[in-house]
Image (cartoon, rainbow, N blue to C red; front, top):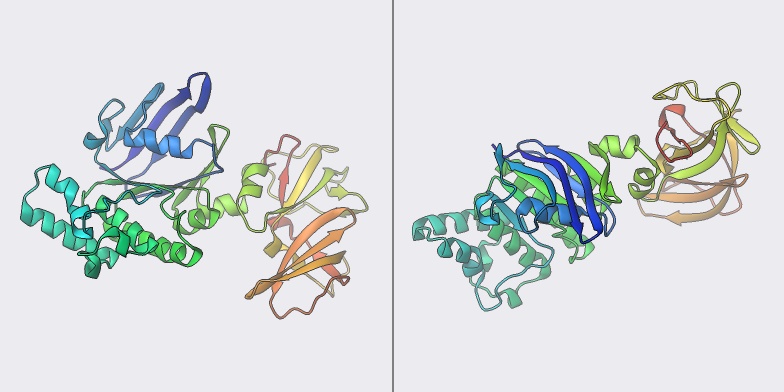
Length: 355
């Protein structure tokens, strides 16, 4: 069993509360990503699970066992930090094996585990090198290998890719995803990078202000954000928003234009006259030159992105970004006819909660 359960966890530094009554259930073999801006409490939560930080209230269970007051070494976890934290005078082989030697493990078992980890991470030819002779990506592979040799049931990653360049980040994301598939272990990964979260996670916990704002699959987080914070934090470029109201006939009304909402899946019947924000992602806006109901949008800026392009437009006072095929012929000053499919819309009330 490698389930992780957080029950009513609270952490405070003096009078400053870092986590506020947090409940979270992580299934066996699940890959959960804690996503949020700096200071939201995600690394603090990971440290508490690892036993590196005491909690003020609540309980932490790992593998069906209450480990709230157990030492880190007794929790059956392995952790990979943002910094590589390798011993500079030791070879890669020694860095991988040192913890096992200290624990008194037999030599043949140590060799077996080191060889297995090196093979999985493709660092077998680096075993006799020192950390100073390795690239950043290779060092992070060694740091991950040091966790792998422990043969733990729960792996904790604290922003392990943040010190790497874009290409290495993409490569190691793939390696970590493969590792999860081959090991079948429970993994909890902390990041502020939405791409890492969306590509790695089985589920994402989006955090802000000491709490989990939304917990769901990457698709749920992206397509149906629970509030405006999640909608703006996840997605690049961010979701476009238009302020308006629910009209007498149930349409969305903004200055000078309106949209039907008959196909929008409201959680509860909308209140006529209520102030709302309409949100839509750039790739969900439809270019519809032959549709008489299309809204005219004035193009202000065009950004070629290689595989596609982004057009920054304006409908009245509302700024709308659109993702278009790379071959689309459009320049600043053009007018584009746009449609907003109701099933792709997101509506938020005055408090920023999804309707």
